Image 1 (cartoon, rainbow, N blue to C red):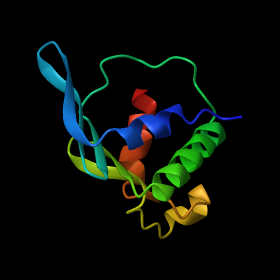
Image 2: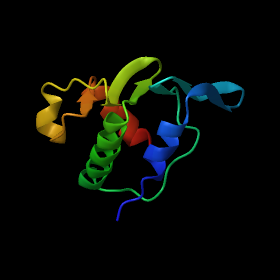
Image 3: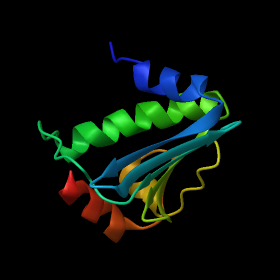
Image 4: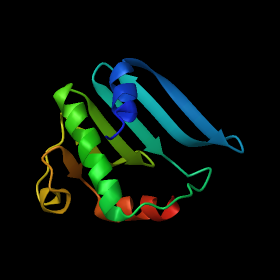
Length: 120
């Protein structure tokens, strides 16, 4: 059984922001307002260990996106302020639906997404 903790956490947040800095420079910004959640990754302050396969990460993203959509919530992942990935309610996949096999995930910039993935 998959954990619903990430989705429940995102759904429960309704207003606020968190900023993470590295050497006094912004690294990650998280903002939330009503049904919109935005994570802006400016730089990755730490490397994330335990590489998952692309298939496993995609499966996790599909589950998260489906739960978010069910609750009317949208999660935007940005890189330096530019939208890269949208999950949930406002996702409008076109060609990315072929890749993700989900109507709840929109990839807006595949090159930036791959760049973020390599940085993790």
